[in-house]
Length: 80
Image (tube, rainbow, N blue to C red; front, side):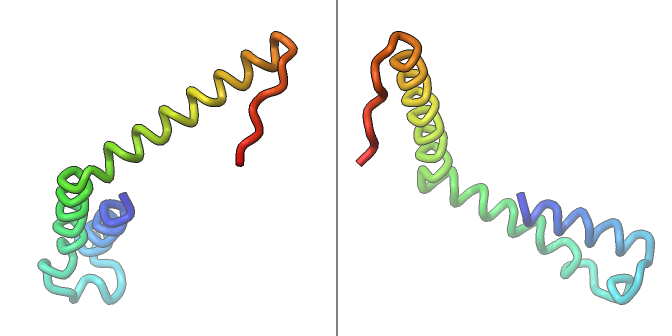
């Protein structure tokens, strides 16, 4: 996401001819978009995205279990 934001900022600066960026070649201005595509391809191919999603689901599940235990008067499990 960071590469995408940087790319958008550079693209706006280039098209509006702001500062030194107006003199940069287009391939430099558009390179963050290529880096963003490469990052997303790697994250999907390596399973990074899926692992992060599973981790978030597990954290939400544990929070729900802890809340339910607290509501019925049982102490939640202590994390080791």
